[in-house]
Length: 431
Ligand code: PMP
Image 1: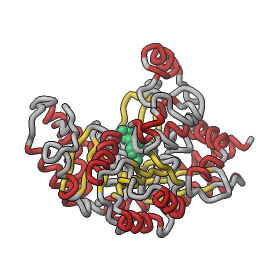
Image 2: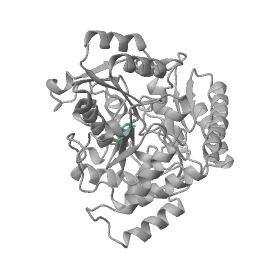
Image 3: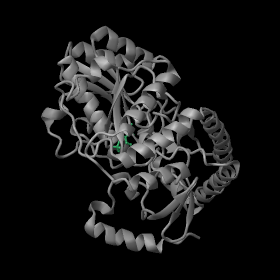
């Protein structure tokens, strides 16, 4: 039996000095209950906590660790560059190199602006879309999450959904009024919003594969339809690829689905676990950003050399080894097949959504296509499944409203151990 006594002690102390004991809400295990596990170190596909327990990790820092934790070339590069100074506040050649690399990997972009998080990337993309079009409103989808900037905290997924917060205190009605929402995968609802707000909508921002209400795939025609509606109405299409970028394909969802976005936002993998985000797009739009243009955006630590070398090293590996994406899909196929056996044997109804190295499990007989269907699943059973897996050394996202992320350090041995754990967990929670 796993003991969590040190984690319990640390959580008690943390709650005294950090609101809720964590620096980002989803870490708190609020919806699954219990004490969050305090980590000490991680290597490859494994994390090790302060009580000496080990876990096969299916969060991978919520996405960045696509090749596993403490990937040696990244660690070495960070160590080398740290000795040169942790920040200059002045331009470096490295920033050009990573921008050039990203432009060469991702379709339809000429320029990249580095920021410090996915939130900043999405915030910047919306400001840029507004500045470029001269319009104020934008459309987002229920259950999608684009960071914690005020305008995005309307019908948001991830921790907002996990905590069941309907309306976020501190976000003014004036700001929220410019955020229009539609159900994911629902083109008629988007068409209606556009018809109701003629020439007022600057952008549609979408997670091309949603990962913040579990993993939800775009239904055939959805992304194509958004592209057409944007073209017909002078609206910019923003792909929020903070999760999907460099994870689903070298060039992200644009490459995978063959659909052009006007602006793309990145985070997570782009910094290899360092705090980085980016917004990218064609020159015609990007040059509206200051100092080339008037849409102001800035950051003291943006393009931070340690973050840049970490991201550059990881992206180079992905660029040079596209087979990684095939390997990840094969590993996901293997895992999904095993999970289906485990859930099938238990007699529980379930849905597994998967694309590439993103997947999620919902306990329901109905397909999960949007926030309403995700919310209707049996989240109590998920809660019990989560804890039964944790006790068996498998670390899953502590909410059904989050995607699982696989890393390429996983071997058949770990996948088999995960499947065995799922079989045992399902038998245990049935009783
Ligand atoms: N967009 C998406 C799709 C995300 O999943 C997230 C975070 N999970 C964000 C934006 C915000 O990124 P960050 O937490 O780095 O601010």
